[in-house]
Image (tube, rainbow, N blue to C red):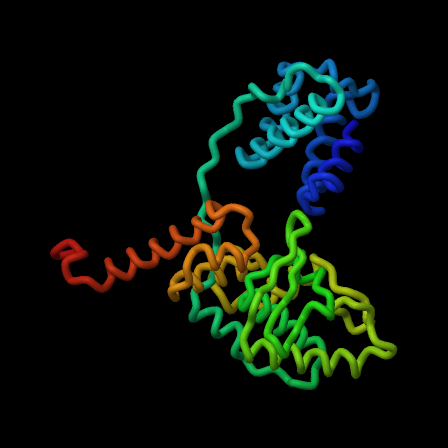
Length: 299
């Protein structure tokens, strides 16, 4: 039933590979616990809320964070809701499980001055890997796309003349993301080096390794982390931090919230609104530092 549910989430609801993978991990962990590592047969249709609470308690004892526990409960709720729809289950046993409250963390981002430093160092324009790696950094910050979207970019969907990317995002939704002349020039240089290096031409993947094989997520993460390490002071150093930086700087420089939502590919405007809190925090900080009446006398 778990595999049937995962196929449903992937093929009928069009959820992303990463989301389906997270459901798979959670449900297989629960299955291992419920069957004592496969000693007994899994019986979802007779599972009670008390059975599920035993697993959640075990997860908590192992040190899982409130956010992780909350996600695992949500995975259970989605699975049993599916069983109600497809297999006649009368009641969702995960519905009444109390989940821990999770505070909303503000996204980690890089200040504009540090991003400028990250992208301004000289690199040899005849070195394929250095040009590719700089382009990866630049594309994350200039377009705000996700790591999975960058890895999946097709060459035919990168138009340096029009200054547009066609991005295949979550829930199999495509969107057009514009970019400027500076990124277009870097794309043209990268393509020249790539096509000279790789003979016969590589498959349709835009970003490739020197062998012509497509990039993969871990490699892209390592490239970004290594470039940011020692250059920026963010708490985390990852592609998603550059995505957050894109959104934050767009709003700080006057972009409207709906435009940023569309560029990021967010389904809900509420997801994008978290960046307004960052912008306001910076605004408040600048006010307190600059305005003569904002500080306590003698402080």
